[in-house]
Image: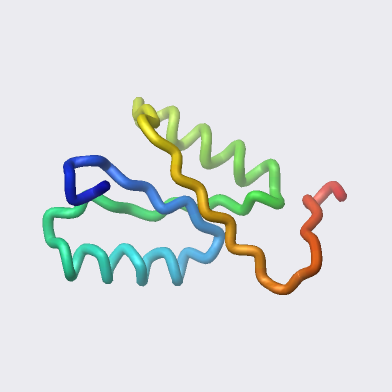
Length: 81
């Protein structure tokens, strides 16, 4: 999508991996408009922070493509159970 002019945000909890992905995309596709932002879906506080940051930038979402990576944790719970 970034190759077609969309601003792409990788919303991730692992920022090291996210930044590596951003750098890899930008090194292969120089014109790609892509960035990483932190969010941990098990923490309502980080979701609120992500949303506030996103909204404060006066951006809107045309599409939301979501991929959840759940490792062999069995199940996840929020910080408040």
